[in-house]
Length: 341
Image (cartoon, rainbow, N blue to C red; front, top):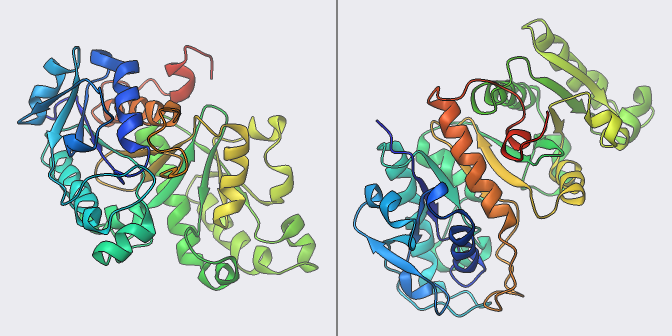
């Protein structure tokens, strides 16, 4: 039986990860037990923590200290300045977290932000980001990145590529797989029995009947029509500039967008501090705060832990849904906040 305790990876130790891990423990304590996989030397001065030998000890420690599963790094951590010597430790901490979750020692994985250039320069990291690396570790061909908050859920079909490369990367297979994984994820991990999906077009005004691009006609619409025959509730392709006002958002459970900024600009505008990065399609639960390493404020004690706290709460709820402990459906965020969906 999987223990109800979350694994939190340290992320880039020169960023705000160590600081917000401590702040998250201060906010959650024993109410939502988690343990940090990282080097205790990298925690802020004065942090209350306790080194544990195994994840199973975390629940008992959480009431009095942040449980830390020690993961030795090669170097110290200087706030705001990544040390190439620590890159291998950042990567191996993620792999260790995946092993623990897949082995049933933790109910879900929450990852603090990494610095992509630092791990690439210091350890030859070959993946565009966390999402792709986790998919490789899990042996999954395709996963979906979702950003979620209590105001909006969004999914970008293409992720970490240049805008100029989006039309070539956007294929019928990719779009079809993304929508199927999203629909299944909303059912399994968010408890929605009949998800409502809204799909954006690629071009301004949804191509305006072909006047400003034809991808909506030749690629997107045929995929959506085929998926509707499978019983999916899908609206689109829609003009992205009219999808995100309050009345429009009330009509769907997720907005599926064609590229990174089309999806992330709306959610970061609506809820910059509370958004959570969720990876759908993995054999385990994974969430992450929806922000980066914030080198500019690291070590100053001012970092906002709201997104990490939301990521921990969401991971816990998703894990319980997967375990069948809470299949009542509705909005995860609304339920966590005691609100109506």
